[in-house]
Length: 350
Ligand SMILES: Nc1nc2c(ncn2[C@@H]2O[C@H](COP(=O)(O)OP(=O)(O)OP(=O)(O)O)[C@@H](O)[C@H]2O)c(=O)[nH]1
Ligand SMILES: [Mg+2]
Ligand SMILES: [Zn+2]
Image (cartoon, rainbow, N blue to C red; front, side, top):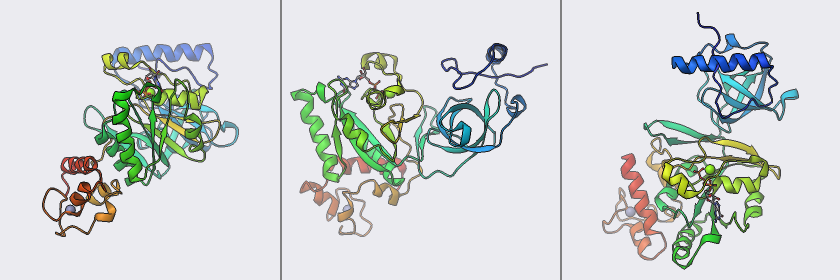
């Protein structure tokens, strides 16, 4: 008969848990059995001892089978606990507030609190996967290597504006700029400054711009997003040296076709604020948005809305479109209008 089967993520150690040798051996053995048999035991609470009363907690990261929860109450406040999630609890991600119960060797999350904001991406199989919850601000990190794609930046912005999340840009790796890439980078920066988004220029190597980022982190839960390799984790490690988030050279990351950061994780910043590092993603999910929410992401278009010749104008090349006219006068970026069309066609909304 199969007894208890626990599964530990191989890279993670037991955080804040004092397990005796016998418990550790038992968990290691049961992991082996689970892996050999290719299944994971699900009846979690029957495997926990001494369930304590309900408390509130903050999800630091999701390991898959466990979540790491920071206690927010009493004796558990500020400590991290590995927890299972009850089957009826919806999916959990960095930034989620939860109700949990401490137990040995793992606690149990019994409820997820309402989210004030949520951001999701699309995984390789096309499924929506949460990136972070309760975020109040995103930093879209761009760099001169890899060069920014405005279509991707606009997708991040649309997703954030739809959730009423404050948007800032960070232009990192400024130490690597040369006369070739700087022109393009400054053109991109100019586009977003024109829309009204603040841009902080930074470098991890020199370093500079780090305090400017820190100043905006206080009292916020912020999320770093951006293409893989732009330096999100490197910036985080300077902002909060205890974070020790893994970073990797671009060439190695590209060869292996994978991201260095594999799951979102929340860090408490000693100078104030929470910062969530996310894996570089090319696909923020926008599938749930309607046309009004999409338009929220293009706030530079707003002054021209309602001024087109036709009430049902789709803002393409047809004559009398106020937005197209605005691009000709450089009042609106033609690239942003192209990106808007691109997203709108993809979402099949008018
Ligand atoms: N020269 C220079 N290199 C940098 C800078 N910031 C980061 N790097 C390098 O860029 C590479 C990628 O940095 P990461 O911090 O791993 O990038 P990331 O955005 O976290 O990547 P993912 O986790 O894959 O999304 C590393 O080799 C860093 O040392 C910078 O300001 N200047
Ligand atoms: Mg990273
Ligand atoms: Zn129009």
